[in-house]
Image (tube, rainbow, N blue to C red; front, top):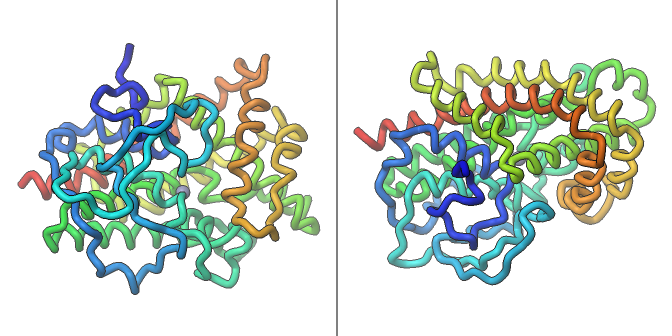
Length: 355
Ligand SMILES: [Zn+2]
């Protein structure tokens, strides 16, 4: 049996079930020798320098997974809420704990999808991305306007990570880097850099609701598909990430310079993935997500989560598997690019630490 995130004997069950960002980070990180061999760091409180520059969501708290109690065994395939894990965790920095840097990168990579970016007023147009969370995790153009600020989220966290290391807080250096890697991975996903094909947009330009509903149903449907594949231990995805990450040492330039080309490459793959979902599942998928109310009291992201289980039933229904091989191929290509960027990002910090 291949070692994968969900059966790695080095990781406690309390941290499971695992989600896509954790799989993505895991497969990239495990391909980087210089990183996996770094010695454990002491868990420390968060340095205060970030508070004013980059406000975090009012409901966010930094939990510390280094201190855990296993409480339950959730079904790994049907778990869709990042907040619910097998363990309960410390709400304050535990004293006397240490943790390996690669594990910090893995276990905090879903943090930006919790409350970190929720319920903030970051931009007057944030409704179009479903709220402040979407705004900080996407960047796309509609006609001539740009929506979202994910590249900024990436850059800010890269700086925070550097600052934490400079101030001797390696633990938070890695933890900010984990968040930073999340935004970087998001920017390699077609749905985070493009909302809709222009044809589809023009055809439905007078129905904001159709546009919004279709964009979020297909986006969420794709996320459900990718996560399910990871949880099945689908080897081509892990291999693609590892291949990308191991290319990092030969790659020219740096992550910041490569960012625009990386986003453009993901953007170019949007149409084929979008129309695959629409042609293959069309009405059934839209039906699943029709409960989402953009004007509702909770943010769109948490509402769509509730529909994920139903979406998985539609996407993986009997007979759908042969068609999915088309999507598997495109997605492996996407993940290889993500692996390369994460590899470059993590390696630059690991190399500085090893010196
Ligand atoms: Zn995200």
